[in-house]
Structures are given as C-alpha cells and as structure tokens.
Length: 391
Ligand code: PMP
Image (cartoon, rainbow, N blue to C red):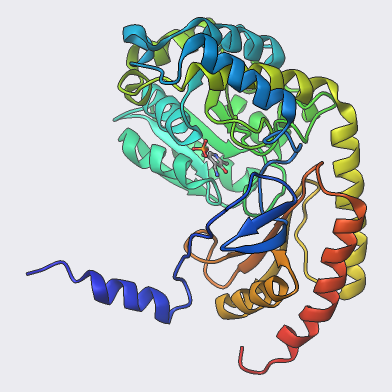
C-alpha cells in the first residue's frame, strides 16, 4: 500500500478540475498584477473596495504600533485585547444584537457555532448549496445531518417533520457561488413551526445588502427571534480578515465555554481589529459605495442579456455566468485573460457537477468604464466559446 498521489492529481487534471493559485503581485483592487501580468480583476470579494482603503491601512499601521503584531494566545488565555473587545461591541451594536464574538476566520466561526449548538441526538438541516465550512460543521457536529433542496421551504419542512432533538436550520444568507438570497422569511417560518433555530452565514451579504450594509437580516427586517445565530465574515466587504457570530448573551457565552474552534486557537492580530473598526464605520456610512455597486450590477445584467449570457437569479455583486462544462468555462476564462481581464472559472466540487461557471464579482472600486471593458470582452469571447463544437 502506498499513497498514490500522482494518480489522484493526474485524474484531477484529466477532468479539467485542477486548481491553480494565481500569484497576486499587487494590492487588492480592480487593477492587479497576477503572475507578472497587469489585469482588470472581477473576482475579489472586496465588494465595497475597502481592502486597500488608505484609512483602513492607516488604522492597521497605528494598531500594530500600539498593540504589536501577533495576538499572542487564544482569547481565553491572554489573546483578548482591547481592540478585539471594542470591535465586538461595535459589531453587536451594528447587528442590533446583545453580543458579538470575534473569530480569526469565517470557517472557524461556522465550525464553532454549529458544533457548540448541536451534537449526538440533535439534527442539523442545511441548504444543499451551503458553503463548505457550514457543511463540514454539520458533519463534524455529530448531529443527524440532512440537506434540503436549495432555498426550498417545502423541502425544509419535510426534513423538519422528521427531525429529533435540538434542531438547527443552517443557510448561507447570500449563496456564495450563485449570488441569490436565501428566502429567509419562509425558511424562518418553517423553523418556527417546529421550534428549530435558524443560523445564517451572511458572509456575502454584510456590506452590499441592507440600507446600512447590515446584510440579509436588515434587508428582510429580521431580528433575534427569527435568526438567533448570525455569522458575518470580515475578509469580504469589510476588507480585512476574521469573522463574528452575533446573538444573545447566552449564545455568546455558550460559544466561549464550549466551542472548540474558538477556545483552541490564537486570536486575530489586534491591529486587524483596529482596521476593522475603521472599515465598519466606512461600510455603515458611505452609502455611495452600495449605490454605485448596485448601478454596476444593473448595468452588467442589462449588458449580459444583450450578449445572450446565462446569468443567475442574483441581485448581489456575485454575478456568475453559467456555462455548464468545466473545460468551456476554463476556455472562456483564458480568452478573457488574453484580453486583460481576470475572472475565475469555478468548477466542481465547488459547484454541482455540470454547472461550471465564471464567477464575476463587482466592487464599489470598479468604474463604469471598467465594467464596459468587461462587457466588450465578453461580447467578443462568448461566441467563440459557444460555437466551438468541442465542448
Ligand atoms: N462562509 C461563506 C459563505 C464564505 O463564502 C466563506 C469564504 N469564502 C466563508 C464562510 C469562510 O470565511 P473565511 O474566508 O473568513 O474563512
């Protein structure tokens, strides 16, 4: 017996599913340098253009001067510093919830929340298109794990009827690869019928959605009763790194006491919390970022329809172009790259088989002229890819 890694890797290549890591040689922004080539990028989650904002950078620098670089230890030992605490208070106020708890990554926040809330004898019901970290969390929890049809309250209802023990319904707020919104009012109504709790991971909703960037719960006007467990990540629209869970006093204390991915990991660098405090202010107050973003999204959808592209039912900055075949998706991505435009091809297993796509994302930092360049390039490349009988 040996680990035949070479065959596994060769099979992945043969299926056009091999993943490459583009080397970014510039800061985040619309214009980047990747693998030595200047490109116009439409694939970052920096939706509000805050990742390279001068004031956020300054807050990080000043934070590092004052607090040093490393978090030093876990929050429960000596890693919970004043900037972390202030950020938690600001995030609680922002989300309108009694408390918030900081995590170093969204992946960890999701593992923590699910595994602290359900275990053997309980049930966790997840949308089948949930982010990998939520699915992993459900499996890790030891609770009975079941996936309902995408965004389908009737399918959820069937699963709820069979569930036993404490039952947690888990969904993305904005689905990361499709860009559509969870039908939270209907999903929450089903959960309420059975006394289940709802957990929403709104990694992609905070910032772009809601009148003040409060994400999908602000968009639908839902409170703590409907969504007792709310997760946000800081590496996307906030432009920094880390994540938070917001909820009741008891929920947060439960996570501090029982969530292993919280207890056994080093806190994020305190300077990142300083930077996030600044970006949170910008996210809440600079409404022009959301307005500009929405204009870009509307213009893209009109332009894409004229070209004949297949888009998804998405009102968010995630605007995937559905292609289906992985090799074709790779070819469109390569043709765009040859025209100076970077959009990643997303293939299985990240998305279901036969639904490869180009995941176009927009940022408030994009100009209208840059969007027109994208549309022009798509108009040129799309027919070539579609006409090719090879696919
Ligand atoms: N949830 C969703 C919906 C995500 O898209 C992501 C990241 N892509 C995560 C959680 C994980 O967050 P992080 O990158 O901070 O680990």
